[in-house]
Image (cartoon, rainbow, N blue to C red; front, top):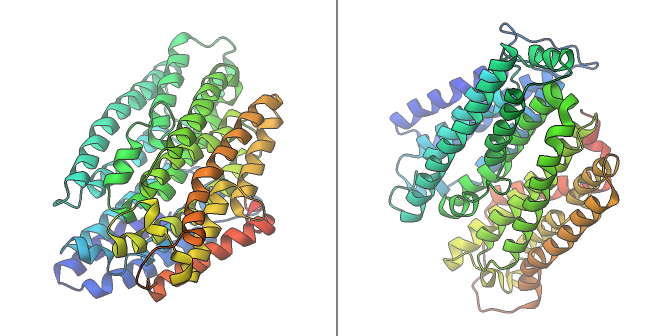
Length: 460
């Protein structure tokens, strides 16, 4: 709980620093505050897990909450370390960027710690409203304004589905508490249609939040139009939180009814994989390719929920961690290349290996991990997902997933081919020291998890 308090107070402090023009103190204060929040989160980890709901059953800070809060905070720290000089180039009001990102993070902490449907909704809305602002915060950029408008309109529409679904669940059970809902499901072998309708509407709302097909249509335009650092935040921290909230609800309440909702999610999963990967193949923009590939990764993460079991939380945690650290490198590299070339096409990476071998190397590690190549964290994440799917479904489902993984190799390797096998006249690209630190940490984590997955798999 102390973690959430710190993250709620920190943006207010940052706004006061911005008011007094202390812009140089914003990043250090933010990082120090987040490290303190991370320390308090880790301190709540218990073996065995003996956590109990607090605030009249509204919140539950158990080991599940601790590990997902921790990965969200660590990923946010790494992303913010890339922000040195970035926000100053696009706005004179830098404090607002940091503050709104932290308000969004506060909503994310609530999303991974709720034990009541009202708290889940509040957490999602705190996160979403902050993201609507962040997507369009570059007011002079038409693409950013368009991204914010699309995100807001589609987000409000999906929120209606989510809220209506929660209402139907409450109408059937008489409670928003996950514990009461679970007990009601167990005690009623014949569930009424209103409850099933509520589950279906909640699936629609949550699938929109995680960017799963066919509710993904906002993702490419919003990711492309938002400032790149904000896109990195949405693609990593927000996606991780969305799946953590998704998993907590369905594992706690709806597991006995999987015969109803699992086929629905199975169709969504297969559609998400094919739509994300096939459309990513045709992209000429690296940033837009990452947007469509994030849709496909949502498909892989859905495997853990479709094949719901005791290992699902562990699978989501490992995959989300692997995807987050690799994406941080990808978006960080994009920022540097885009600043030099002025665009985000694949051709912008031509000859990068000769001008900056370090950046090319870490980007290669990132692309290999996102493609699921062995000895990287991405391979371990996919392995855990496929193992869970095999334990519940026939082999054909894993075959579909493997085919999609092979498709992804083609567009991820376009970057590697451009960096190492294509030449281009370019001046030397300088990587700032703080970028090197973030890239080194992320690449090292990718390799360590790929070689020694027990490094993180034992935490849930």
